[in-house]
Amino acid sequence: MKDFRLLLFIVLMLFWIVLTSTFNVLSLGVGVIICGGVTLFSINMREDSSIKGSQLLKYSIVFVDFLFAFLVEVVKANIDVAKIVLAKNLDIQPQFIQLDVSLKQKRHVVLLANAITLTPGTLSVDVVDNHFVIHALTDQAAQAMLDPNNVLILKIMKLEELT
Image 1 (cartoon, rainbow, N blue to C red):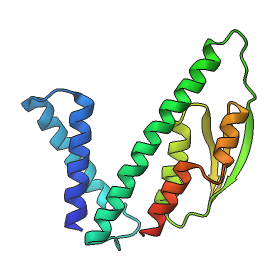
Image 2 (image 1 turned 60 degrees about the vertical axis):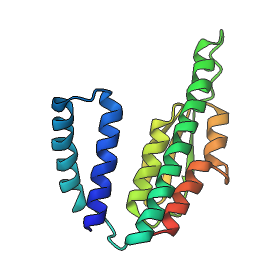
Image 3 (image 1 turned 135 degrees about the horizontal axis):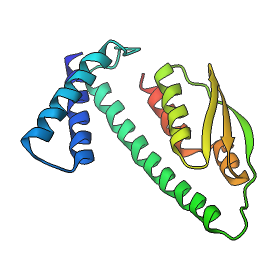
């Protein structure tokens, strides 16, 4: 449990430093207070404390891999949406799709729902158990979500295997 707290605090502090882009005593002090508070409050929210030692390290590596894949998907989706917005004709095909993903952990369901919402052109409208209702701006975005080789879903499934 202490390993997880320390790792969570370090990751949050690094994220804080990247976001604030300033490295002074005040900024670091505020970061320590906020990241420490988030660490203390989030420990009780852990659904499963069975991740230990080397498994925690593997989980963290796969999670970082997911984050990089997510950033790539966000950049690609931003380019696609920018092309639509800048085109002379607004070529969209808004639609709702249903996506069924078999995830055991609630945190992974939330992670997927948030990743979908944060990716331009898609929005998680409703999630019940493992059934997602997603609004997609284009046919291409809808097909990407339904693709069995969807990189975000595969990365989250890999996280599931480690828990």
